[in-house]
Length: 168
Image 1 (cartoon, one colour):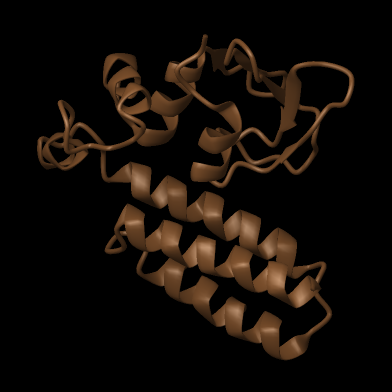
Image 2 (cartoon, one colour):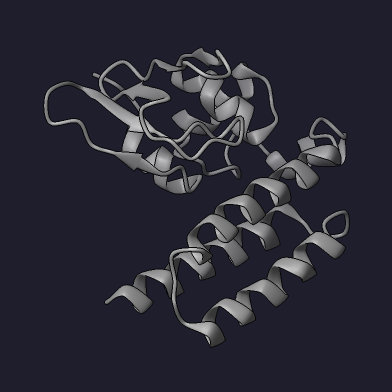
């Protein structure tokens, strides 16, 4: 029995995915490089193994989380096993204060978020909606070195919620 839920992890990190009716593998958009084509990467729902055919990144679910969090696999294992509750035996804030997560991680994250927002904005025909989010994108780009990971993820989450509400 696995102690992880692949779909919950994908949702936690806003990784876009499509279900595959014919196997345990879920098609994902690889979060480790800029690509907009589904089918370039997959993650197995049962085993947690993932592989990207474009950038050749791959491994188990703990490596996947480690790459997204900017920590090593042992720390990612603790995160997943504690259901991402960092107050127990693992403290992500302590690791960040020790500079285990480099500052470049935030600029890479902001670039990924900008890329995803701009690709979705292309599909929306509401000028007011698009202008508002283009201004926010400029804000993210201008202040990307000062923004914290949590702020970036909250902005991206807000954008996804507004897009979802827009389509309803």
